[in-house]
Amino acid sequence: REFADAHASEITSLKFFPSGEVLLSSSSDTCVKLWSLIDGSCPRTFKGHSRAVTDSCMIDRGRNFLSSSADGTVRLWECGTGQTIHSFSRKENANDGVNTMDLLSNNGAKEPSCKSQLEFGTDGKQVLAGHTSGVLTLHDIFSKEQQLQLPSRFKSGCNTLKADTNDENYIYAGYQNGTLAQWDLRQPKGELDSVLINEGTPLNTI
Image 1 (cartoon, rainbow, N blue to C red):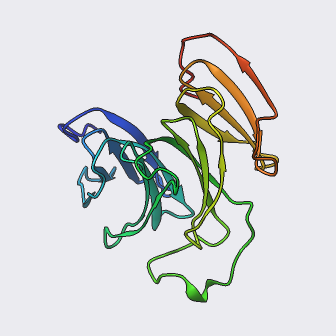
Image 2 (cartoon, rainbow, N blue to C red):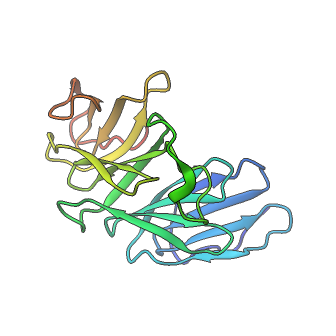
Image 3 (spheres, helix red, strand yellow):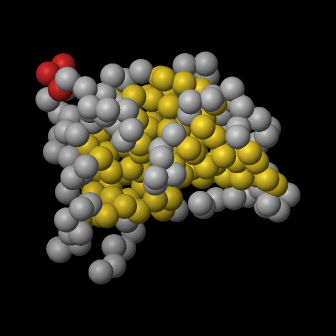
């Protein structure tokens, strides 16, 4: 299926819903859109970011999702209403753009009685954000708190993040200057190891 003129600018992220029948598209035009792969319709456009949307993450079945942006925010959305439930940003610099993010599930479930009625499956979830400054921040999606900050060690933006599938405490980050670093969230003061793979060539995917 072809979606003509889906966005006004380049598409930065595409994510399928678990059903396989719905697609989420993000763009540098500041919008996120929901698409039906059955009839090609766009039932909802999510607006709120002020700069390019850089990445997206689905939560559980997709009633909620996250989008990150060069405006420095990670937004938690509810698909049915199109509302932003919460906007996360780095406490130390709210304008530090977010280039990439990864969803973690290693925080343990919390008592669900206090959460918004628009949240589904956010308990026990965290989002790790990679910033333009190179700083990494970890936010608890349920409590809405910033839990920790990993320093910018390489004077270069973080372009891609991936948690170890066997132990989400171990994080791999790729940077604009070609550095690949391994971090342990339990030891946030410095990276465990790093290697400059190809100096000056950005790492965009792990």
